[in-house]
Structure formats: structure tokens, C-alpha cells
Length: 494
Image 1: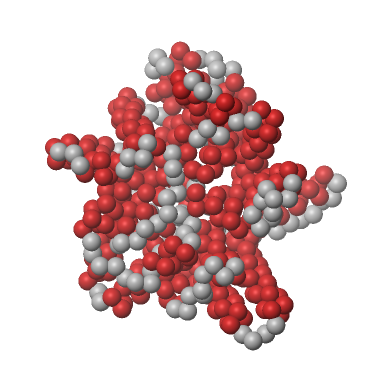
Image 2: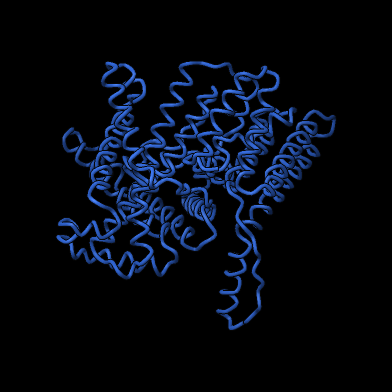
């Protein structure tokens, strides 16, 4: 059930209305049933995986809590907790590995053996990737680690914990929530609140706008080019790559905002997943602003436990590269994602080396105009690096990515693109106009947020004519883009 589908537009009001109608004591049960139904709309049998991951991590939490409260010697407690958390990780990662990586791992093994002229017949497993498995397994494992570290008490109510793992607004594409945030909120059902409902609906409207008007329209152009890369060259590929840089941001951010809005309508606050990443002045800052729930998960449960930056420069860079290797692999069972992740890791290492050699140049600039110009240069540099990385992310294979990058460098046929050639990339004049309006709106909203202004509060403070003119502009643009709906969110494949 896609957020941008008629099914969800029927599902959501029914679920939320009945949630507020039902007595408090059964509201969480209702949300759990609705969340399981939501997930089963993709493939009913994969609900067993979700329930298995839930039960394993719930049980591990209970076991560790009892170990902590037992009279055993401290050394034995530590060993038992280590075995418990290890079992939880092994079982969950094994499920993720089989359903997401088994065929990829076998292909890599075959290629490696081929380097030594060893030929083997490797079977191919007929496995369909369960939607959202990377998200809910990481979310469940974060709970296990938090209990292990004594940061939270184990949740005793299995139904409440199951709702934490399966909460439908963020179940299939995040944000990857933490128990310290969402599980705590689920302890007490919410009553209907007009401000929450209004804010939630406006957030959902903005999310649909970003997804349908921008991401789906850009997808038409990007897909046209990447479906036949050899037919395009020069500026056409540059435009397609820049458009994909915006498309993936709008696609994933659109989902995250709809998820936050749906949860807000019910009275729950999900973490922010994006904070204007393309305003970053470095790749390091980019990852503080991009897919925050994943980057913070990798920081807290991988990078820091490995030693972070506390064990010398060489070890810090190793930890950093390993973290980005895992980040790339998390995104997909393809070498292109691994290269994308490692590209970002290498960029961070290079930035850090330059920072150590030259210091932070911006701190030495006293003239404000020069400082702003230098910041602009760094934002542009980071955007270009991110755009280069997205080529590997979008390409079907490494050879296609290299082909795109090589052809893009030539920068020929510039005039053709800007004198009507862009219409050969799958977008018409009206679509380009609507896209331009949408990009302008997104840029204005991003500038407001970057400067600490809440767009919803800002528009709510304006005259009702301004408010409703803005709302209707967004609605009209969505309506004129409905022929593009039905496209899955990119991050559903992860």
C-alpha cells in the first residue's frame, strides 16, 4: 500500500477515525492490527518475518533485563548479556542476509573464484526482497542495543513493543526510530488534538507535493536517460544527473514528511530525517543532514563501538570507511551501492586530511562578504560531490556509471538542451513550468527552515487569503500531476 495510492487515502482516515473513537485501552491494539494489515498489503506471508524479528528482539530485551536483576556475579551477567545480544544480532542479520544479500554474495563468490580460474555451479535463490526489512530490523536491533547498554528498561508489554517495530507511518521506509523516542510515546494513547491534526495534514500535503509534483516528474526525465544511456551525451547527462540529485531527495524526503505528518495526526512525533542536506559545506555535514535516522544509527551502533576517532588517525579512517561500506551495502545488494558508500567515506577522509593540514579556513576569514562567498563555494563543492556519488547510486552497474561520468565531462550540446532539447528527455513544456514552480517553492521553504523559520507556523500566521491561495496552489499542482502517481518511493527497495 503506497502512500501515494487511493488505497492509503481510504486506509488512513478509517484507521485514524477509529483510533480516536475506540477506548484508550484498545487503541494500541487497533494501531498494531492496522499496521500489520498495512504491511500485509504487499505480501501477506512476509508478516511472519516482521513478527519473528519482533519476537526475537522482544525476548532478548526481557532476558537481558532479568539477567541484570539476577543475583549472578557481575562477570557472568556480562557474559550472558553478550551472548543474548549476539544471538539477537545473528538471527536478525541472518534473516536480512538471506532475503537481501544471498544471491549477491554468491555472485561475488563466483567472481572471486573466477579470478583464480575456479569454475563452480552456484545456485540462484528465488527470493523476493520483503519491503522495509532493512528498516524494521535496524529499528528492532537498536532497541536490543539500548537495553544491552542499560539506556532503557526492557519493554514488558509485547503488543506495545510490536507496535513500536511495526508502526505503519514509518514501517517500510523509516525514519528508523529509537525506543527512547517512539516506544516511550506509545506508552500512553493520544486524544484527538486539532493542532496536531492540522499540522499533520499540512505536513502530509507538503510531502505529497514533493513526491508527486517533483520526484515523480523528475523520474520521467531521469528514467528516459538511464534506460538508454548510450543515446545521450554531454549536457543531457549532466541535466539528468542533476535532476536525479533532486529527485532522490524529494522522493525520500517526501515519504519521510508524509510519515511524520501521519504520525503527527495521531499525536506522535517522529524524528526528522532531513535537514536541508544540499546546504551542507562538507560531506561530513551532509551526512548529519541526510537520512539522519540511518546515519545516526550507524554512528551510535557501529562507528563509535568500533572506536570512533578515539584510537588514532589510521583507526579513525578505517572505522569511517567500514561504516560507509556498511551504509552502501545497507542500501542495496549491488556493487554500485558499495562504491557509492565508499565514495562518500573517501571524500570524508580527504576532507579531514585537508582540514588537519590547512585548518578550518572559514574560521580565519574575517570579512563577512568573503566568508559568505567561501561558504557558497563549499556548498557548491559538496553538492557536486553528492551529485557525482548519485551517478553510482542510480546506475545499473559500474560500467554504466563510468560511461555516464565520462560522457558528462565533455559538456557538449549545451545549446541544444537549453533551446528545446530538454523536451526530448521525456518532459513537456507544461511539465517543465510546473517543475520550475515546485523547485522555487521547495527552495523558499528550505531557505526558511535553514534560517530557523517553521514554514507551517509562518503560513499559519498570514492572512487567510495568502494561506488558502498557497494551499490551493499546492493542491492544483498535485492534481495536474496525478497522471504520474503510482510510482514507488525509491527507498522502498532497501
